[in-house]
Image (cartoon, one colour):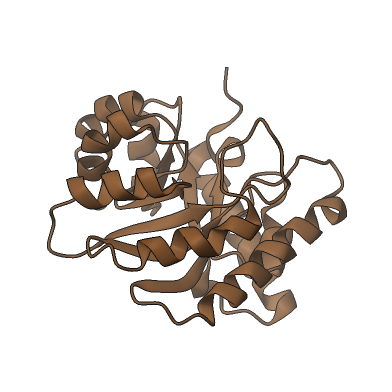
Length: 229
């Protein structure tokens, strides 16, 4: 058993233990293996160990990696920022986009996506109000989602966030809790093509706290593939 397989088993066990602790169905938490900067060979190792969802940050890297992996089992999620001039590539590469944060970007995706089933997207929320991070402000999320509800080629599945980093997970917990509450508020709007069933939050250092607070997608990279050089 290689190190990636061992690491994946450990992460899955930690997710299952966390779910058991808070009375949550572990099947509702999906692991996104963040494969950015990692070669296709490591992705293929993870696939053989049963990992299905992979997260990439950059379009150019994904354009090179996805065809190299060339495995129908793999589902690719864009977890990094998306520029409008790269939308034409993104709609062909990714099964879900976590980082929609403007009407202009949503409109570009809606225009470019041509498959029969709508493209699954998440709204990125800058829950900590950090100027260096992407994402819509929490109080602007409703207006963005209302604008997207009529975009027939997009299905808004929920929210994503990258909270301010802190070594103490209890300092991060309120941000996760705020995102979960925002999702509940938005779900009550009962807008078409908006489900709010997914919460993408939590990374290698804090995913257990995120799961406790409602995460359904956790983005784990270094704890699976090792630190990036």
